Image (cartoon, rainbow over all chains, first blue to last red; front, side, top):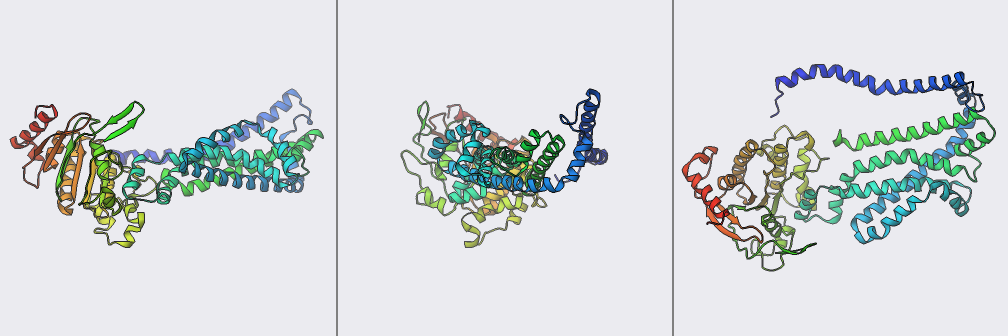
Length: 268
Length: 245
């Protein structure tokens, strides 16, 4: 059963070159696509003679990123802290709620619809309310970033905890396992692929939540910078702020992906 | 045994009386939904009877369950996909700290060898074929050396070649460990090949309609299936299933 058949050995030869082309596809195509977008961007400006206060040139945005790096960094720090804080808070609460739902059906039936209802209120509508409630500091921004990450994680986590193999659960019963053992040995590991799928979504949406929260009642952060530069027609700086914001979101996303790769080993 | 269902109570089993001796290999055979699996779960104390009594080693099934006297093999392997083969086999030793309080009769490595999976200790379930996964499940069920092994169509999802092979292996394991085996199956040749006794169930509500004693000597080889004695037994089971016992 363990021996390799001749057919398999033959197939592994072209497989080596296939792996090479897969590397090219994986690590060269995305930057190539980015370059394509930048070229298109420049082409649109040139062909339609768009004035720089409507769309800045890629070169001027790049220059602004370098020249204004101090200003961008000062505003990036609060956004990073808020999204990170919101990410942690929202996900920890979501996981805790999901665990309590799985262990208590009544709790789930009572509060799950409420969680869905909260989700349907637009985040931009909640944000001024939270600023009124929590003031101008970090608190309302963290709260909004947490709120935006809470729901996807809750839904996925509930599903993940319930995805546990029925026969594995029955086996735990036959072995007279305690509830906490069943959770630790079966339910929790079963939920991890679902959890990470949610965390990947949450990693980028928490940055979005922090930025939207900074639009109101704020005097620092990338969201504040975006609103300010829009009104001042400093479009190069506006674009630079957007680039920094997506770089932060991308960094969070990569971080979560690396964690997933390290934790969910059995799926690869 | 009566189950509440959306369509009203459902009687799964009726007037089932059976007695299984220590070290016996007994098969339960019957049409789908006759309550064979239910009976296995009643014995394992996963389900509780509406009426009647079940005794496992002169006590309620819950005592045997709490004492970890059951090994259970399901139709699907039910392995934990994040654990490799060896860690799956070791699971029953970890649950309830069993391995710390008792000396396991076999090391998990030995059991993997017993089921023919030497060299696959570090393989994850998705890297194993269905038959190999089921062997891991069997090794897992045996790791605490349970006196009773309950098997619910363990080879039902496998192809016939793999099934024949694992049947042979199971008999070898049974003779090596001396455990009592209660085996649910849909396959007449499988039941006759493995068992000392075959209990034939009627359709729902399940009742035992016949008991066929298979007096073929162990150890049994696959070639026994071509002998007239074997065919006489399969014919007897088939007649009983058709209600002409």
